[in-house]
Amino acid sequence: MNWPQFDPERIALALFNLLQTSTYAFQSYDRRGKLPENVPPAMQPYLGLVELGFSQVENQAQGLEKWLFHFRVLVYIRADATPDAIPATEINKAMKALVAVMRTNPIAERQTLGGLVDNAWIEGQILIDTGILDQQSALMIPIMVDCGL
Image 1 (cartoon, helix red, strand yellow):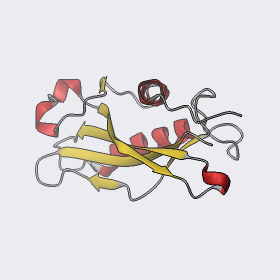
Image 2: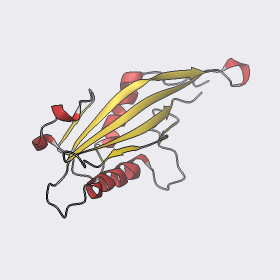
Image 3: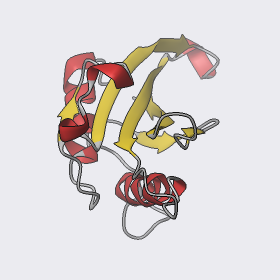
């Protein structure tokens, strides 16, 4: 019987490596997560992966456990300060690239992080700050990873 791959470090690293394959031109990446004011404009666009925690459920037949890992992807993009610039444009490009990397081909297939987990997907509300006040745009994407049974 295959038991869940409960290896948080390998799973987080596999997800982080996958996100770095997006077509969006990020200048810096990290797994610590930073506040926008701690990421200089020269290091943006920035992508950070933050681990928020885990949940374990046993609502399966015969008490089989299931582990879910909760992550947030942080994206910071310094918006162009010119009056004609639309800050949401770059946020939308980054979002599109990250959605594409979380999908597999064909789209109906699961994202298994190279066979390490049962599935990884974007789930929940995606928050956007378009930098109206100070040109600092931000995007926060929730990702769920299911280790399987």
